Image (cartoon, rainbow, N blue to C red):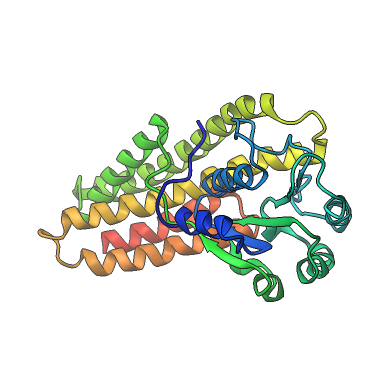
Length: 309
C-alpha cells in the first residue's frame, strides 16, 4: 500500500515550495527507513510531473530517470551515473519537468560521486534531482552542500511481521531473566547463553524468511528493463533494510523494558545507556560487511554482561 504524503510538516513545506516555484533543484531526502524515504520521493515525483502515483512507483514515466546500486557489491558505478546524466540533458517528453531519482545515493563510488558533482553545480533546466538515503553523512560534503537536505521524521514501529514481534517478546523475556537473575542457581549461566544463541538463530531465520517472501512479491512488479545487477542489489537491499528496522525495533523494545523496570530497579537507566551505545555500533559493523548474526552476537554478549551485572 502506498504511503501518502500527509497534509502537515514536512510535506506542507514541499507543497508550498512547489506552489511558489521555489523548490530546490536537488533535494537530499533522508530518514531512518529507506522504504519510507522512497515512498515520499514517489509521492513528490508524482506531484512534480503531475501524474497519479501507482503501486509500481514512478520509474515507468518517460520523464523520470533513475539509478540504483548494482550487483552484490551494491555500488553505483561511474558508467551508470554518466548514463543518468546524459538522459536528463534532454527535454521532457510529456510534461514540463524531469525528475532524476538516485536510490541509496550513499552507494556512489568515488568516481561516480565526482562525476555527479558537476551536474549538481550546473543542473539541466526543468529538472529536479532527488537523492535518497538513510546515511546522509556518508556522502561527500561537497554533494551535501549542493542539495537542500530534507529529513523525514522517524516513523512509528515499522516491523509488524508476527515472527519479528514474537522475537522481540522473547528478547524482552531474556532481558528480564538477566536483570532479575532468573532462573537462579547453577542453571543461570547456561540458561542465559542458550537463550542468547537461540535468539540469534531465530533472528537469522526470520531475516531470511521475510527477505525471501518480500523479494518474491516485489520482483513481480519490477520494470522489465531492470538489469540482473540491479535486481541482485535490490534483493540484497531488502535484507539490509529489514535489518535496519529490526535494530531500531530492538532499541525501542530495550527502552520500553527499561522504563517498565525503573521503579523496581533504579539502576536500569545507566544500563540502558550502555546497551544503546553498544547497539549503535551494530550498523557500523554491518556496513563493514560483518555477517548480521555475528554483529547481533557481539551486541547480545555485551548486553548479557550489562544487564546481568
